Structure formats: C-alpha cells, structure tokens
Image (cartoon, rainbow, N blue to C red):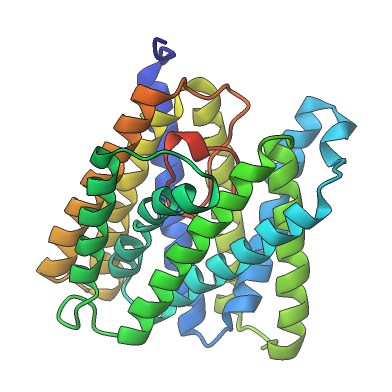
Length: 316
C-alpha cells in the first residue's frame, strides 16, 4: 500500500512542533511546581482535571454520545491504572533529574513496547527491529551510568515510567480493537482525576500563589498540546508525526540550560541520539509492514513516549 500523502506539510509540521514545545514547557512547570514542595499526585490532579477539558471538547465536536459508552470497564481500569503510575513516575523523574536526562531515558518506552508486543500480543518482530531494540536499550543503560545521570534514584524512576508506559500502550492496543480513541482517552483521564484526587487527599499541601500558577500552567499547556497534536494526527500519517516527537529532547535541553543552567553530560547526548535513531528506525520498519492508521487515531501524551505507528491509538 502507498502511504497517505501529507496535506499542507508545513502547517502540520508547525502544529506537531508546537505541540511538542507545549509539552516540553509543561514538563518544565511540573519540575518548577515540584521544586516548590508540591507533591507529584497534587500536580497530576491539576494536570488531569484541566486536561479533561480538551478531550470533552473533541468529543462534543463529534456529537456522538456513544463515545461515552463502553462494555470494557476492566480493560479501561487496567490501562488507566498502569498509565497513571507511568505518569506519576514521569513527573517524579522531573523532580529528581534534569529535564533532558529524564526525557532521554523515557525514550526507551517504544523500544520496550516492541519487545513486549512479542510476549503479550504474539506479534512478529524481525531481526532488524530486534537489533534496534537491543542497541537502543544498551544506549539507555549507557545513559544510566552515574557519570551520565547524577541521581540513581531519579534514573530508576524515569526507567520505571518508560516500562509502565510500554505496558500501558499494550493495554491501549488491546482496547483499540473495539474502543474509539476518544473513549479510551476520556476514561483514562477520568481515572487519573479520581486516582490522583484520592491520593491528593492524603498529601495535600496548600500551594503558594506561584505554585498554583505552575500547576494551572501544567494543565493548560498539556491540554493545548493535546489539541494541537490531535490536529496533526488527523492531517498526516503517524509515521510523519512521530519523527517530530523527538524534538522534545531539543526543547527540554534548551529549557534546562535557560532555567537551571544545566548542560547535559556527553553520555546523555550520545545516548539520546542512538535511542532516537533506533526509535525512528522502528517507525520506518513499521511503515513498511502496515498501512497508515485512519484519521481517527490519536497520539499519546507526555506521559508515554512515542510508540510506533501501530500504537498511535490514544492519548495518555
């Protein structure tokens, strides 16, 4: 099959790049909020409540109440439970590590996903993709060295986020057999509101005015980034969009330098290039095997690193 052409490629590229930038700035505000002493569950609660608004907006645009209906409640719970803790670890890693370090480690998620698909979905992965997975994971281990990442606990938390994110995307793929992308997104975000809300009851800290601004900015930027990314996926094949997701390492590195004066060590730079290259190669191999997804597909969000084209089913 031939690949779906990209209409208005410059416009689509700008929307993708803008979305990635919004998510990068959102992650910056997550880190700033955590530095004021606010607990991660409380930050995630604000992110989820405000992030629910663009999903409801997109559902309202379709004027289809069936999007709220589901018979797979257990599947949604499993996907949401795992995805929620992936996002918790992702946000927590920002409190412990520079943005670039945490983001680079999290790029291991699509590589882990490829391996898990063989075990849990009985998918066939050829030697080329296995080689990309092994090389990419070796690059992640290289970045995990103390010389590359100063905080071993932070590195472990970031790696947990990547692993849990991969499991969450496996659950998304199974749900995608029968569920609409917006239905999956709605229930996931709703569960995140509930889970983070209950957790926040036990750890609540009254935020300063600055901390409140940081949390609100986190939700607004995450929601705006989601809308822009959704537009991009409606206008272009997933393979075209997914390559731009790796711009995030550029943006977060710039933010690290501008806000915290942190320059990533060379291990993170080299490892990031290798992991990004392996991820893009897996996307390339996927596009040779699969037809591009229809415009109904939607991307993941900041909590789950960019999966391969076949997994572009649902936002986190």
